[in-house]
Every structure is written in structure tokens, then in C-alpha cells.
Length: 338
Ligand SMILES: [Zn+2]
Image 1 (cartoon, rainbow, N blue to C red):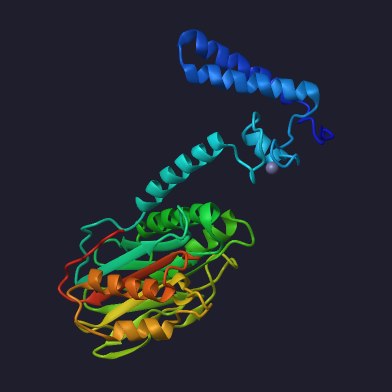
Image 2 (cartoon, rainbow, N blue to C red):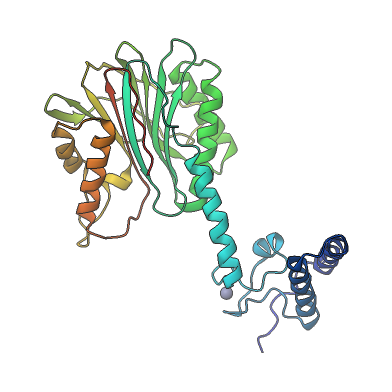
């Protein structure tokens, strides 16, 4: 019998009794077997409270912790040891979150004047912290491409990623020039997240005439393919998004001729590892990009992704992975999501 470590908060009994009262009322109105089970859970929690074992994990016998109990006052296990029911609920929640996050990716059929694009987005877990967006700017201002990586992984990173996407889209609709838009996004992200949160990203404001303003916020520059030559595109290094208030974002201006291709990527690509611990590297990605002949940009990003996966040779992917290619061309856009 473990020594009771915690007896809940002073008002835990009141919280549980209030919950029980609500469940009883609901049960009188509807004969739902699920309600019976919930009432049994509350009664069991009240019993544990009486016996002094409330708040102790059934598996490891350590404290469950207030943060977890505040969210689920009838929890029997700590976050490290979820019950089969809790595991199933978490999986359902994650599947829903994955669908919601997929819904934030650039939608199929989005037409960009004068540009083609294609992308692949692979989250290492159910949800990812990579940022991948194609944001139409107000009339005549072209399109903003954003590819980046929010610090961290999993659910926490995906929440920050979703908030960044929402901020970009909201501010883009106001009609700000791209540099000012990035500065505002930086300030809002800095103000609204914890100090340790930041995102690196590469962004490109595309004009229909082939002019590109390329921004790097602490992120690898995209690879630029002209003919058979592939090299990192010229960028001005700026600070990551969210690190400091008041950061300004300076672009490098370039012009892409028809057929010239920019390939944006996240470190899930360059830092992918094989079984021996070797890194995939940007150089290898450049080698793949240098081979022409893809029928479109979907085929190009597919080929890049396949090469990363071949290199990994079955090793589990440790980080989220995004590849996005743009090309000055016919004006048809190509989008695909795996
Ligand atoms: Zn435990």
C-alpha cells in the first residue's frame, strides 16, 4: 500500500460532487450507458479521495500531478502511464488534430498567376511543427510562400504552427508588404508565446512577372536550380520569428526565368539520418534537384522525398519534413498532399 502523497486540491471533493450531480441530471434525461460509466468513474475517484489514494498513479504509484488532475479530476494514471481507455481517447484526439492540421495546408487547385508549385508535408508524429503555406496576397501583390519549422515537436509545436498560419493569413489579407508582414508576425508571435518559442522560416513574395523577394528568418535558404546549376539562393540572414520584438526583415531580390526552380525544405530533410547516423545533407538534396526531367513539381518533390526515404533505409523519421518547390512558368499550380 503506497503512502498517500497527495489528497487533491482543497476543493477536489466539491468538484467531483458537482460533476456527479451534473451527470445524474443528464442520466435522468437520457438513458446513456456512457453516463453510467462516467458516474462510476466519479464514485471511484470519491472513494480514492476518502481512502487517501486520490492522485496516485495506478501503475507507477507516483503523484499524477495537479496539472493532469485539473484537466481530468477522475484520472487514475499519470501522463506517462495512460489507461487503455485514455490511450484510445488520446489517439482519437490526435487523429482529429491531424485532420485539422492537414486542413491548414495549401489547398489543391489554388491558382498562382505565373507560377507553379508542388509540395510534400510529412509529420514525424501524428501532428507536426513544420510550417508550409501559400498565401495569396491582395490584388496585384502576388503570392507569399512560407516554409518553416517551429521549435519543438509534436502537439506543442503543432499548436504554435497553427497559430502562425492563422497570423500569416490574417495579416496577409490586410495588404501589408511582405517585409512588414513578417515583422508584424514576429511581434505577435513574440508577445503571444513563451520566451523559448520561436520559428525559423524562409519566405518568398512572388510577383507574376517572375520577381521574387526572398526572406530568411534563421532558416536555410532554398536551393535555386537554373538549368543544371543548383546552389543555395542568395538571402539576407534575419533573426528567427518570435525571438525578439522589433526585428526587421530584409529581402534579397531575385528574378526567376521560366523553368528556374526554387526548392524550400526543412531540417527534417537535411538532417534525416540513416542507420549509421550519417546526415542526408543539403548537398545530396542539391544533387537530386540537379537532375531535370520531372513532368511537374509534384514529381520533383516526390523524387526528392523518395531519395530521403531511400537514404534512411527504413529508419524512423525523427523530425517533420517539408519540401516545397516553385517554378516560374505557365501559371498552372500543382498541389498534392500525402
Ligand atoms: Zn505513472
